[in-house]
Image 1: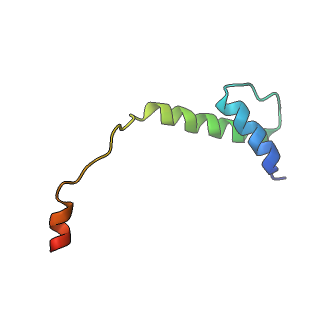
Image 2: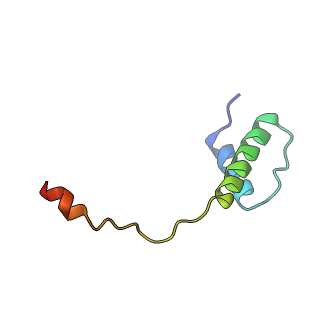
Length: 63
């Protein structure tokens, strides 16, 4: 059985707010762990700040 959108949203909220799930359903646990893993992976990636500027954009347009 697939998770309803309501249940997926509740699991997402509990995962992002670092709450426990409170369920032993394997499908819900898998979804919760997937979201937690994605969040942990995002924390490990460096944050790129600023906007990369390409000063030669006008030169490319003239060609």
